[in-house]
Length: 416
Ligand code: AMP
Ligand code: MG
Image (cartoon, rainbow, N blue to C red; front, side, top):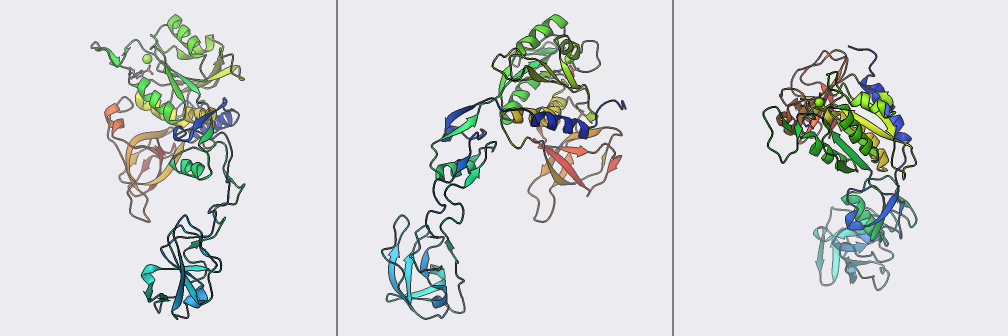
């Protein structure tokens, strides 16, 4: 194995260090409903205490716990529903009918659930032997957040939970980071567009649409360029055009074949290279460098550029491991990935000396409590096997030093 190539860990550290130096491109204001999947560019602060009043989490009777625990009948002094304020504090030896979400009357320190009391002729009693603790079934004013508290920092991923929080803070709009424009340049004389009928030696461009989907998932806006043929002038012209983008992904043409021209063409445009191979399988010939930028709006005068191996499985793995963290940094995310999880190997698997392997696999995430989910390989024919990859939901990680992993061992999986 060529020992001059970086190990997976070394390449990952290099990419993480590069990602840490990148700045997001700018911000825009979007309606809350359009913020799902975007990256927060502002601090989200509580505009009031959360909850804004001490409120009941149950339908029942507000009371003083000490009085309720004496199991004497308490007079029902009033009734409050959600959205209304109690008309008075809670009198002594009394209970107050209350609905979920309603403010608790002053003086009450617990709420007895309807199911736990017996009520008759205007009085209510906690049924023995049940007792109630002070604070039970009440969330105190400001217990979740105080007015002015920072609830979300810039760089947070916005999903349905963050949208709910922003809505609760009275934000009909959010400031989000701009999406980086990512050029996708597929290469290869054999590659034809999805819409066309391929000749016997041609294949449809599957990496292009796949990378576009991956780019969207990582917070970018894909810009699919026409496929470049395997000749230097055409590739050079295409790459020059791609240099207007915020990030460039080239697929194909990075191996050792006679028509693998990406690296020399990048070099001829003045590229600096971070690495031209990593000890991983698939994806070993992966190239990471920077080409002079032609986008005058960019602060950086260089655009990061990945040369991904052409096989779709290799492209996907190399993207998830190395290109996604760079893209997520440009998109403003604090968490850049890649995301790994632990799983239990369901069968023996052979490693490969000197290479960290990433094998399409299925993980059964519905594991019983206390157990790691079981993961098994999707049997396939290597890194060109789209059928196998389409039936996977993760990649099983085999460390570089592992000759053989055994069923039952704890392993890492790479999540898409
Ligand atoms: P390369 O990295 O150019 O040597 O390509 C490796 C393998 O991936 C070859 O079998 C190519 O035909 C295939 N390949 C390259 N580009 C694509 C693409 N855009 N879609 C599907 N397969 C591709
Ligand atoms: Mg090729």
